[in-house]
Length: 149
Length: 119
Image (cartoon, rainbow over all chains, first blue to last red; front, side, top):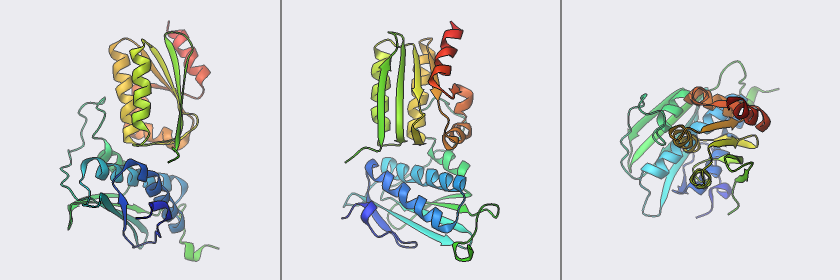
């Protein structure tokens, strides 16, 4: 399987990546590129990429991988929203984000994601857990690439 | 594979250490940072500056590593200071409340002088 960075990464097309932390940088580049093409502002791009990184980190750490050792990522757009999905092959029981222990080293991912994107959705997918993130393009700094002058 | 982060450690005195992190501090970089921090603290450092001037990204595992260092230092009566000017990272620290847990400085010099002032 090719490394993610060299895999064709088009909108709406799912890509399998190895469930390994070394793949995170490639996934972030993919999310950034999609966010730029979609016309997100600079801060929105960082927020989206940050949330994508958390979702994939969670899938790698807590989810199971396929027999081939992969998880599946997908970028999509719907109207003024860019959507990212990651599906693992395990069962992930999210802990409710709460004040708990501020020094706790793990378990912040979901709360972080919710703080920087418009929607975080967890559901049971065909193979495992699907986390979906939605980030809307704001009118202030967003413009559709098609209408950009 | 080439790492997308750098780590550098220097001891200013037996007590005071600076760890500089550059690039992208994600789940693939956090274990290295953690090991470096642990060895510095095991050697008896009581004042630690983590210099993120050259860092461009941090995630929850990187933040968790810093929180854990902060916890260890607080228990032993030490101090952790961060150096960071990157607006995106500062915003992440604000979102997660890290800015309320420790002081964040614009330069290593100002972080170090805050120790000196505290003594």
